[in-house]
Image 1 (cartoon, rainbow, N blue to C red):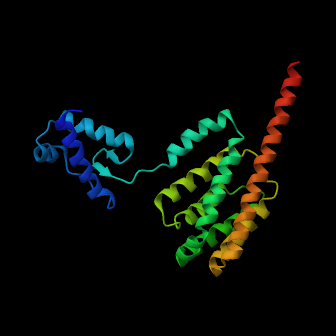
Image 2 (cartoon, rainbow, N blue to C red):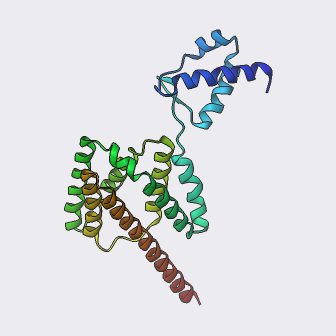
Image 3 (cartoon, rainbow, N blue to C red):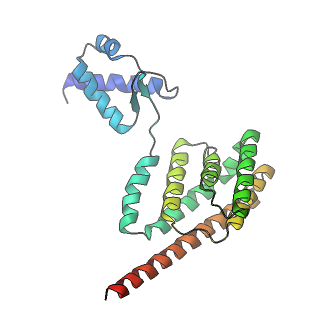
Length: 235
């Protein structure tokens, strides 16, 4: 990298960091060209590198905005491919989620506010109503857990848990045989959060994660049975 480009790269690093937390719009290309005495081509080359890294977002009509890097989609994309090749990696993903999620529960219990708890209560009521009708409640389920993850107090941990949750739920193809029991699991978690009862929260969360493991196992057995039937039919 030429010395001019290195200097520009370093200057833009400082600029991005200054705007990162606030998500402010970066100065225009014209302003930056005048400030650093560089060409538009050189400026765009460096910007392209940061856009690829996910720390700059370019939108039509708004210019470029600095943003916190998000590893969520990177984890989903990378491990999604790995799971296609080796579905048993789901157990590793679940183990990692269990370790991380159980470790942050004390912090979550302390940080959850009244508005969030009320929102989660609405989600649980919707889950229970849909479960009685025999309907799945994927949107409520996701919103419930994303609300929990937002309270871990660490951006990277939140992104990792979001990615792990998404991977697990996208790969578990089997419909849960008892939707009302799943809704009740979420209600138990919510009650523990409302009471700030850490023991109850850990117990209810652990039970739900154990249920996820059971569903993974059932899904694999089902897939194995379907594969065996397919092989037998072709013989």
